[in-house]
Length: 157
Image (cartoon, rainbow, N blue to C red; front, side, top):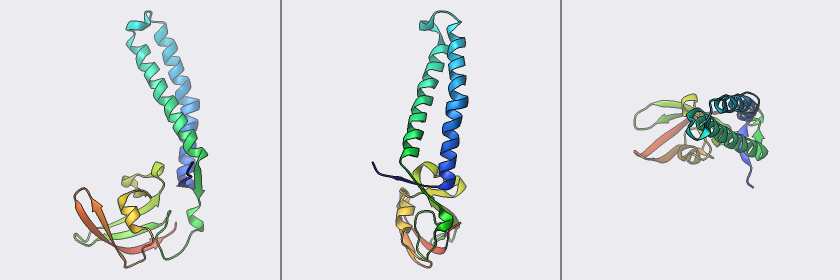
């Protein structure tokens, strides 16, 4: 199986979510199932069926988290350096059409969140930026058409 790159923060967040799902969510769901069973006929018991569905979703999430953690290749971004964009880099860009500036960190798929300025290594914009340097332009095909970004800065925080 192929390793999954992620930052230390992403790995820690995934471990915390796994712990929460196992130690908080799982027992809570078991209690909800137990309570629903007390209400009689299970075939017409909506609370029981909802709790069982929630249990299935939680167990699937636990399996996914355990699998991702087993395949994780944790990268300490603070040890990286260089003048080219690589995984973990924080990149300051300007849209050459609108002059809007944006800053993104290139992270693993599981920790990507555009609202927090974190984009997945497999996203079109990250793929276009890999190996670029300051003042290079990157062309990105987006659903709304092509965009061109100029790299203003690269840092490893």
